Amino acid sequence: MNTLDRQLFLHINDFARSTGWLQPVVSAWATYGIAVFAVLMLLGWWRARRRTDPAVMAAALWAPVATVLAVTINQPIAALVAEPRPYTSLAGILVLAHRSTDPSFPSDHAVAAGAATAALFGVDLLLGYLAAVAAVLMAFARVYIAAHYPVDVLAGLGLGISVALVGWLIARRPLTTAVEQVGNSRLHTLTTGHNAVAAKRR
Image (cartoon, one colour):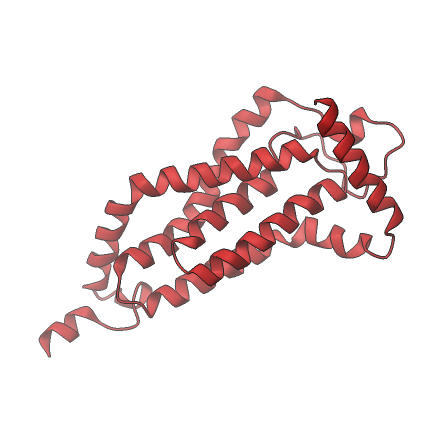
């Protein structure tokens, strides 16, 4: 933890201390807000079913895969760095987070938010922007409740975005091919709102 990171954390912690009215809202978001990304991914899948481009559905299916993959990749990184949580290193701070023995860097919540956001931009711009706002709020909230330092969430967002983008470059073609094949099968309703086989027969 560098001096700037510590100072920024303390500034945010002072802000949290002075905004008691905001604490329940931010704490709830920091804990349960991750569910919003699941809802956005579900909406992405639903909207992709109405599109004719199989690459869009492939992107919708990639979003949850990228999120899980990014969090999985983060585990050995966090274990290797083994940075203590702020509340185990700094005395006298306001702690709103549920105390955990897990490493602080990078933040799992931020990793998931970053990956989901990057993937959703490939599905629908509106959903991508909504996810981006939610991701920034999630990153801030995790610092606000003293679960992480600012660098922890910034690194988490960066890692999540990187995994989603690099993974998509690798997975796009095979996923798109798989979507096309499913679209021509009896399972077509999973990937499209119309039956491609029936459409061809007409």
